[in-house]
Length: 428
Ligand code: SDX
Image (cartoon, rainbow, N blue to C red):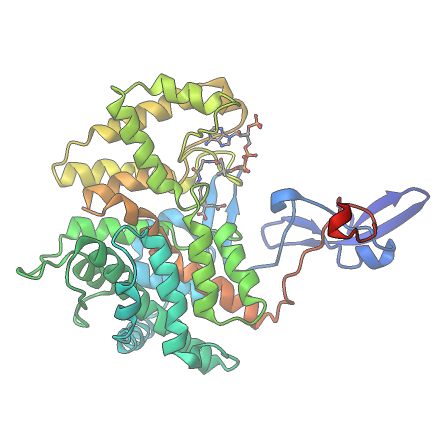
């Protein structure tokens, strides 16, 4: 392949260099385009064909259904690693030695106490508040109690803000859930592992000791790993662009949480369960919902299906589907919702509308079935997605800052009114 791209505009032709990644992805570097063409730009709604950065963190191949964090396959990580190991690899580049992991976890635990005044902010929310809105607010509020986490120009300052948020975020997740349930706010125990501690904080009842189920701990580990990063998705791009103005890490993460909340993105896992429940209430009539999903006049979409990048099976959905079977079986739970999901999947995978558009189950299609089996309320499903995605957001933010990426500021094509004169109100 030649090393340049040629562009012809009218009588003029221009050349732009090609850049190639380590997995042979090719991009046209158009940084000189506007200057060379006296103002011509590109436009690409939804950035479907536009790269925002070069990154060493996650590689995915949507056509082949491949996903790797720092070169490690998602299948191997889900099978062999635990979530904190994967978080370390995403943030620092390689899987940790035992000594590195021990220090990382110790540093996180040492910073995991949340200023008690945060509870006053939490108390101000009505119990009906959606947990994603609460979590986004509390995450941004952390900045006020940790001002040194904003200007992280030194490696030490950046490390300290990273271990702070990895320690405090699970506490905020637990408090957000427990507030809605009317349960006392708690801390776990620094004697526990990272994921075990999350379970204890979320599920411990004030009047009994909490026994950690190995099945549930393994399932949560796997789910958090599978959600940990996904290159330049909507919420990660949000974290990067907010961080590019040199807003602090916590403020950037708060913006990412808001982006993830949307039902087209992370909010889909909650929407999938609500859709499956509606189908169940409708007597399992999947055909009605398939018809709605295909009807252009109906805004309804088959939630948990389709993906901007995967035009094959989302590899995470394969793993989660298998895990859902195992967890329900191990816990002795019969959940008709799983059968409805499988039926819907089979129908969609043989329906020309879905096949022609390469719409397959994505990460959100089966995850809610496991969350529900674990006793997590449906409104907390997207919060669990955020808990998993946290290390990926951190890794991407850190890479953007260390690479000294310029402030993100896209161009536009103006399609509004041409110059016109002001008209006094009495003459309008
Ligand atoms: C996540 O980007 C990431 O990596 C995200 C994520 C991550 O880890 O960060 O993987 C997590 O967000 C997964 C996606 C969760 N969202 C959903 O499950 C919501 C349902 N899915 C869709 O809304 C949709 O598939 C998107 C938003 C996921 C992707 O949309 P695109 O890439 O913008 O595709 P599109 O909307 O242009 O759709 C192309 C065609 C359209 O039909 P035509 O106009 O060509 O006739 O496919 C149709 C769409 O109407 N279509 C669907 C559909 N998804 C796409 N039709 C019915 N049901 C669907 N789910």
